[in-house]
Length: 100
Image (cartoon, rainbow, N blue to C red; front, side, top):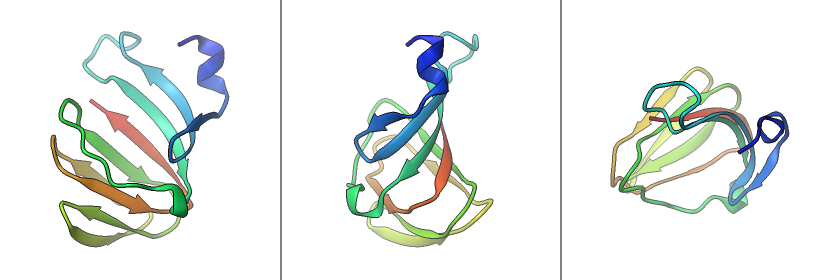
């Protein structure tokens, strides 16, 4: 990924994504840091067996489902998704996604 791709919004399967940092740029184990804006109708459940998902909520409220359990999230909440946990959410607000 080039530096110019970091600065622009790119299409993502479930909304828009602005990549801020990618693997090997930080000297640590983080694979990507991105700001994302999800579209409620586009969100589908997913499972990652090889990465952890972490989300920080900047604005809005939405429901997140982790392994079938629904919780309401709001501004300043942090969501940790362990390996192999099925997860989905519905939101219209930007979030910061960090995947160590």
